Length: 110
Image (cartoon, rainbow, N blue to C red; front, top):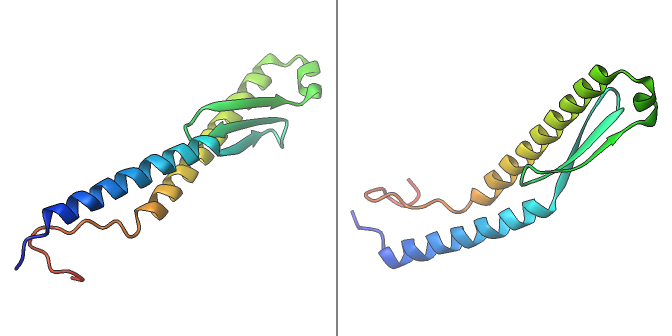
């Protein structure tokens, strides 16, 4: 049973860290949308879970139903954030493939 090469482990860790930083920057530039009320309210969020934009159909605003506007806006924000979290999770899972760090005492390929 051989010990893993520490220099190789360090190089792999640095490579993984660089890839993670690059992915975080990429996700910050990407956006997803969420909507509610059949598209009456649409929200755009980034991979950093920041809200970029909220669009509300003018007819909803003229209805004067403040409670409905608030409820639909909250639902659309939650949908956009859920979509952004899903995107981030999927990208991190994709990026983690191939960056399996060897466990001391384990055999390669085991």
